[in-house]
Image (tube, rainbow, N blue to C red):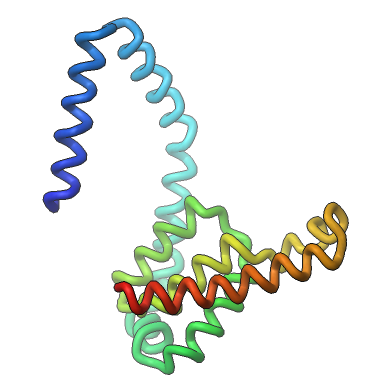
Length: 160
């Protein structure tokens, strides 16, 4: 574990200790509630791990590195941003998937473009958005979201 993870564990344990001292019953009730919540999402976590395993099985790390790491950064950024626009994955699945892509050798810029368009642009949900908010709003919101997603990806490439 790195120093940041260890620091978070220490801080958490200290606050947990304070909470136990202040009100043991409330703290233990909160622990029971959170354990119940964890039971409710354990199947989703297993599904995330399964999905990431399938992606990394069918797309070997060399291929990921070739298309998302070593290739033309601008072209791969736009391609993966477009892929993010038409993909409908919950964010709690997308973040671990993106982490796995980076670990497999993907460059940060196309991966961030994929992630931001995945969460900000909705081609699949466009009909619903158009019906609820109107065509103009849906087009403007999705277009601006796409542009800002590319800007965010490029800024992340500079920062990181």
